[in-house]
Image (cartoon, rainbow, N blue to C red; front, side, top):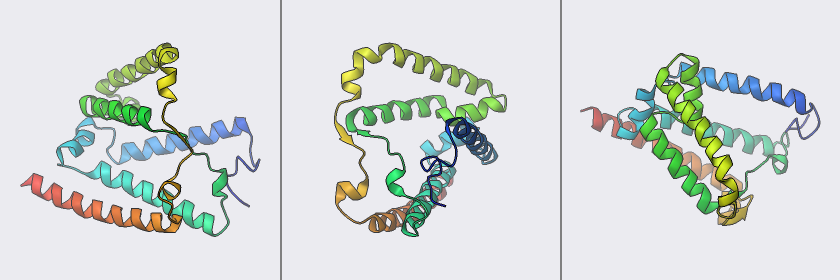
Length: 194
């Protein structure tokens, strides 16, 4: 059987929502168990005191990347059917900066705020109310910023396409970057704790 299962018709729209819900609950559970429902732990990365978030998220990215790459090589997943969000470079850079500033100020990202709310944290509830208000405000002003939102369209772009190098080489380079990042994170943590 080949993946992605939804694209091959293994299940329909209704069951895909159940799958997404279960994956979301599982993801939230493991975020909370890792301590990522704590604003103190999350913001400690910005002060280079505790780089756990960086290490865990980079590990997740590398694991997913290696899994997809090798499942594709083995013919168990058709990578051409995996959805890629189109790249709108300038709006996405601005959106990333806004999210990052909100993360530093509020201590949560949208996902970790949901995790923290589920454990009864009031600060996370205030943050989540802000997220919902921001989503509503964005929806209201979207007609005014629609042209900017769709500007600098680069299509569904991947690093191998952009750099014109094989997928395998990109995978290898990202793994090297991760190893370097983990070593650097350990070094910085030790320096900051002195």
